[in-house]
Image (cartoon, one colour):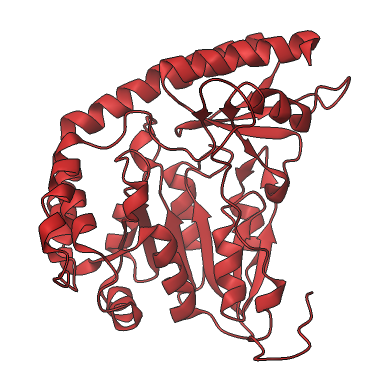
Length: 369
């Protein structure tokens, strides 16, 4: 724990928080940089979204709609939901933090899984609550392990499905079993940031469960498949009482007007989304096949990234591979802070980026490092 000798003192536990460190954006060498560290779509945003964003450039003196009504209505129309049950935020990160602020405090506990998204730990600690980490089975969330962590003090369970950085997921039947085992006063937060990429018949993002239960929230983002990460657009589908609580504590203008407009246009451009899904389907399978052919272990992924495991012997470590790739302009994500020191996470990139990375890793595994 850090100590502060003078000046204003933060709340207890704040200095115990490990700051979130995003993936690197720059390489150390190479004529061209391929950034594959942050799970950004190689197709970029819809041209219609870009046009909608630019159209507001001459009206920046005006406050946005404080309720993000147009965006909530567009999301509701797309999924067949009630817009009153949707809350929008500056990325799903803001919504996760709002949930923690609303439902957690000193003396409370919240559960997430060992390789779960690090924002959960930050949000929990920032509100004075205690994080409880459930073990995983084969890099996948384990319902029984999560339920074993639940106590009378548990107020929230955070579950990324699919999970980042592993790319694994729980079938919807397991999600329902998890919910059934939770107390009524415990909120299950299903973080479905990568739901649009999943092509599994047994998967459910959580909409059905939210519609039928008072203690489930699903969060989503426009940062991934819609390619609007720079605009910070997230949304939560909530039971009415939870939506009411979040609307009481969120900032009055927490969504900016160009982001709202771009989000509305993006979700309406289904052809662009379908192209992004098709690209991911093709190159995710290709990457897994090619990486395994190099002798690398790859965790089965249903998202837009792969988790690559290195042998850790004879110089074939994740650290050495990262250095080797950076010198060639290829940026992947180191994962020590996710308890995966011998793995790198790679975004499914463009054809050029994917082929360049596999070629470079082939040279690395052949001993050219």
